[in-house]
Length: 197
Image (tube, rainbow, N blue to C red; front, side, top):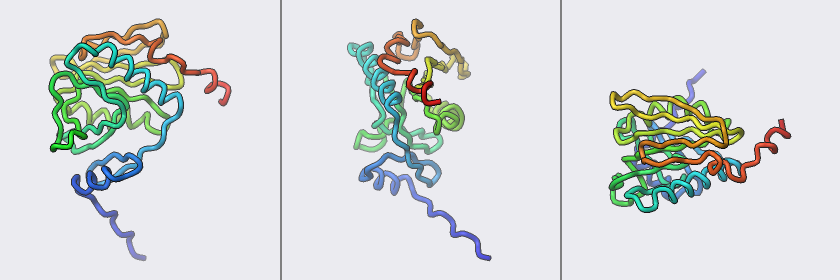
């Protein structure tokens, strides 16, 4: 019985060459490509709401808001990924001259899906924590009202808190603004989810 042939490994350069021409987005880590799945209507609404709110809140500030097409590289680990929403305050730093790979996010937001929730909470957050510029990480549920917040402290540790009320306000110290939970979930229908189950 012969062993299966090892999976070919790609260099970051090979990944980027393929990714820039690809119809669908993929993450890259340690020579492997991981296809990203499509998003639900609720997921898309939450991402749009968060992006819109942050853009409005940061409009007159030296911060830029990017939605899920901005690739982020964790230089310390080699992960290339696409956060749902990313904010950079100050001058954006990019890998290379194409300005499509951000290196210095200030705030990263991931909207949780059943297929990616464990990864977003675990390994992906391990990668994100290695980015020196990152001050805050938000995990937003799409099937119920719940926002989990991780804020980097001066000693490098991360402080966790969560909100579960549509009337709540999430203070975002990394970008010095406040996000309304009601606005995050504007037009998101949780009843449809509950009827399916």
